[in-house]
Amino acid sequence: MSVHGEFCWIELTAPDTAAARDFYAALCGWTYEPMAMPVPGGTYYVAQHGGQGIAGLMGLPERCPPAWTLYVAVDDADATAAKAVELGGRVEMPPYDIPEVGRMLVLSDPAGAAIACLQPLPQAAPPPPAMAPGGIAWRELATPDLPGALAFYGALFGWQGREEPFPGQPGSVYGLFAAGGRDIAGILPLAGPQMAGIPPHWAVYFATADLAASVATAERHGGALVRPPFAVPGIGDIAVIRDPGGAVAMLMQPA
Image (cartoon, rainbow, N blue to C red):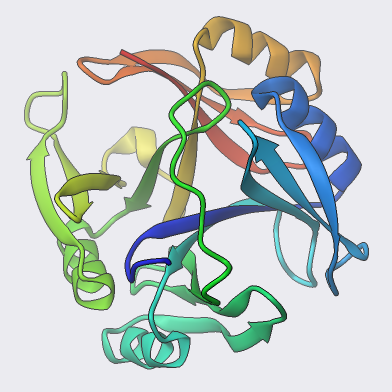
């Protein structure tokens, strides 16, 4: 059974789901199971990793850009929507029911970063996070307002937030969200000239055992390198890529 405030799913909206499936199959080793759901293109694909569902792939809804969306489990979707507005956020997609899955909504925080919430049915428990290559290594919020993010998500999901020195960058800070006694996501401040023009957003990191090889695989299968590999002391090596449909994702080779 899902616990309020746990990350429970990720989902890709893509202009070409066949190209997206081929790309992530090559990059992450995923296989897919189709599901008949009322989504753009008529099919929802569940990516399988290590014998478990890890992500969903679907066509682009109207006015929706290609992107990865992160989901958080909640006890009450309608109450979460009301609470988000009370805290200064905005409901982008009001709560609605998904047969055999649960009740979901999409909201944006006060800075504009979007995140989805799911009130899952008892039988729709999410899989645990997977750090193996091809699995989820980390989740991260990029925002211009770190203190505001700590306050908003703490009140909405019950997360415990804190600031720490950014590894390897004296004078810079990094935020962390914790739940259940463990760190579950980071907060990257959108500050400085290198962050100019980047909108607030949530990002997902995929684990790899060989970052250089994964970058080469991404480029060979129609992806593009957005930021070349760089090291974060004590964390690992990271690269930013764009898939063939235009969605941005992160690759991490943990230290």
